[in-house]
Length: 434
Image 1 (spheres, rainbow, N blue to C red):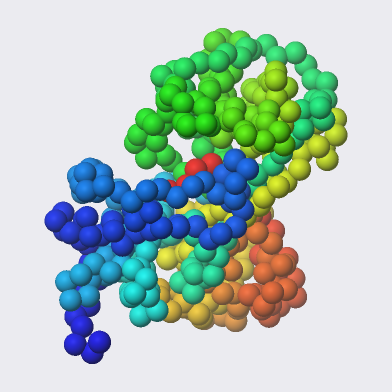
Image 2 (cartoon, one colour; image 1 turned 180 degrees about the vertical axis):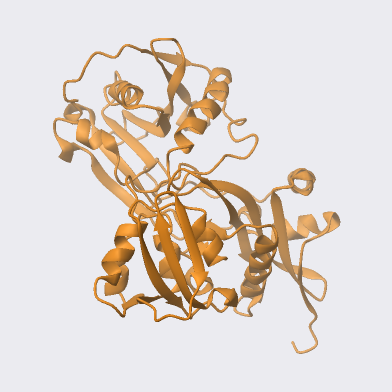
């Protein structure tokens, strides 16, 4: 092993096939830990694995990825052989206050089994962090395929998602004013037009939501997907005829009576409460169904508070969604705003991969404006980089993180001040992965 030559760099076009073969999803291997997945609406724990990609598929991916300026692949080579692969995607994400922040989305990560435990993942991660900083992206995020992998690189959960079920016979809505708009079942072509418009309006006000990459909804189809049947599309129009809500759902076939009559909502977004209520009102009372299942939903789904029996909505799966990692602390903290004005001095001393973050910082927030600069004054708290990353979008508890030992208070009331400044309502959420 001492004679091995290791390189960590971007793969060339002629190396892309080998790059993909280091990734589980391209090789037909498991790409998620064996646990009930809150992003999967089926009765199985998670969706079935893919078959290994063909040479033609690998070349098609390579041609698209090489041209994609938002896609930044990285690979580990040992004696010229690609043994590890990962990538970042340049995204824009809504941060507290409604602003748009730049973010590096870490995706498609794998090391060939016979080369694991040799530090190749850490080297690729370090290279991706440095490249993201050069592009001016002060934040990295990912969906963790396994919960124990990414904490050592500074990532920590920042958003959650749930899968819930609702029995149709329990799904009565509280009375409300009549809907001045209308619902319509549409085909995939119309859904492809409606989704970007609705999502853009939702994203502007939802902390944690991503700006979709081009082609996000191109794959919508009216064709059947095996026994799952085709996707169906339901739109809501306001009184002027403008689309202000849309849902994708399906009615999968089941070989057993316990899952028969299930309606699976794969995505639903609305720009206002009236459209939101109208969409759910039809879906939870769809003819010839018994159960509604919705996956990848926020923990604080407003529908619960529209039901005559809030207990009827049962959370069947819950997991963390996106994990965050601050790469440039002052830049990240000043691109968001803070609901409660105030100031705090905090020390970070555990960032081994982005050492410029290790110092005492003075954060001052006044409405939409914030300042974060180094200081020689005594800190109010010492906080781990991962804990600050979890707090960044405002959906985690500073008190719980302190109780767990991730935050040490040096002045009275400092943890409460931290909690008040970083909190957001509603909780952050993003509706799709990468």
